Structures are given as structure tokens and as C-alpha cells.
Length: 94
Image 1 (spheres, rainbow, N blue to C red):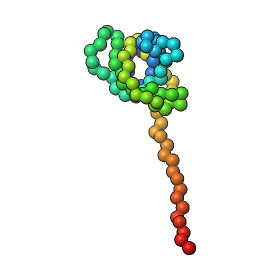
Image 2: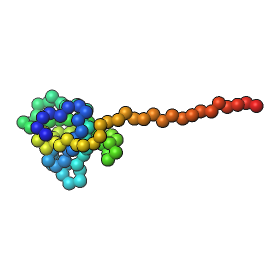
Image 3: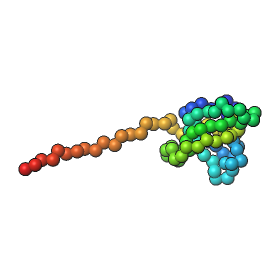
Image 4: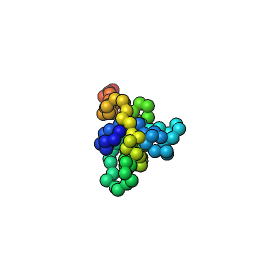
């Protein structure tokens, strides 16, 4: 990925993006913000959420990565959480 990511983008972050993600440390990452801090050419600071296999956020992180090493992922779009409804029964006093 050579274009700057945008908030909401889903990325695979692995050793191609930075050595800190070598081995089994690849992440699925949902971008929340992209920093404007000055960095080395081709590098960028991202803030976002690490997602598990179901697409649930399991932690917030700020990462420093190479743009060229980021890959978009094919996870489905974010769905709003479903509300659980519980039924309450009226209590009858006899």
C-alpha cells in the first residue's frame, strides 16, 4: 500500500511493515487516525485497534510502520453491535 491509509481502513500489519511484527506477531488493524508528525520518508504513525479473528477490537495501539509494507485486508465491513433485549414480565401480586 503506497497511499496513506484513512480512518476506518482495515490493514494487515506484519514484518513487511516493520520488524516489530516479525514471526507470529502479524496484526489485523483498524485505523482510527493517521498522525501528521514528521517521520522518515515512507514511514507513518497510525493509531487504531487490533482486531481478533471475529473482527472484534481487542486492544488500542499506536504503531510506526512503512507505508509500502501495509496490506489491505478482506474482513467484512464493521457492523454495529447488536443490542440484546430482555423481556421482563410484570409481577402479579395476589
